[in-house]
Length: 368
Ligand code: GTP
Ligand code: MG
Image (cartoon, rainbow, N blue to C red; front, side, top):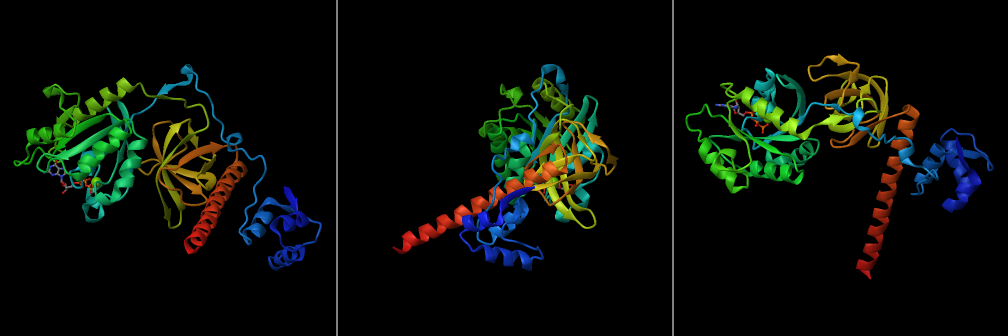
């Protein structure tokens, strides 16, 4: 739709109308002095002069509906459980054992470098697990993982004990107010010393239940498949207490767990659906990216048509690669999604511009 006349734009930018006409001609757009420009064209021209054009009265909330949940709309959903802990303490192995899979073997150098999201069917119902990296370089990922989480499982190797990223994980979980269940792993190792681990954890404020504290600590072995059912049991118990529910009937929303560009598929994002039901063909906006969901695949690589709250899914069809941690929302149609995305981009550019102009001011003061 048309937004502004060429003359009007030239005056506001403080440039000659003829300059704008010439610019348009060069872009292959026939132009006249009194012609109306649409938003995109006006933005394109203005950007050349470091200005941004905004649609007056744009309100994002008009595109992203906030539906109030009535209690009767809420249906129980799977708990989202994040596995955290120091590098090599056996997080991926433990999750592999829980889901009878073998991800750990295929990892480069045996080190997890991204967040994996999996749905595991247990005797007490489905549980969604997020596997986080333990390497010190991935602090942001651990912090992010725990944000979307109901329960944290802190994995501590019985032979290694509490290490720097163990402590960091405890702090992330506490900051996010997420309850912690401790899995003392590798108890199959003769040199493992669970009591020493408990002692060390107590020094960091996690006191085991059997010592009069509040933290459940379960000795497990991913390798020997020891006490895995017990761990699942406690996860289920802890989740029941939280009475997790979500409304599956409204437009879906949730959070991006991770995203990448894949050859032949384009931008691919693993998302966690937190509200509503996500369906193939729907229009989605996330950060400054948008698109129509071309396809969705579950954690086992199977195509799915719709995804309920509490489940992870891989989506394709976005215009770009979103950032992990970004929220996503289903909107009316792709046009609406594009509108929201473009407006966010504009806001970001505006912020950048004010930042650079501030910088120049500071430079001037510095020189004076
Ligand atoms: P990052 O994701 O890189 O932080 O590592 P991780 O915590 O996921 O550890 P991973 O599962 O990759 O396991 C690290 C090493 O410990 C591997 O060599 C596993 O075979 C070994 N391991 C894991 N669990 C056990 C266990 O219960 N017993 C024994 N003996 N070894 C284990
Ligand atoms: Mg791992």
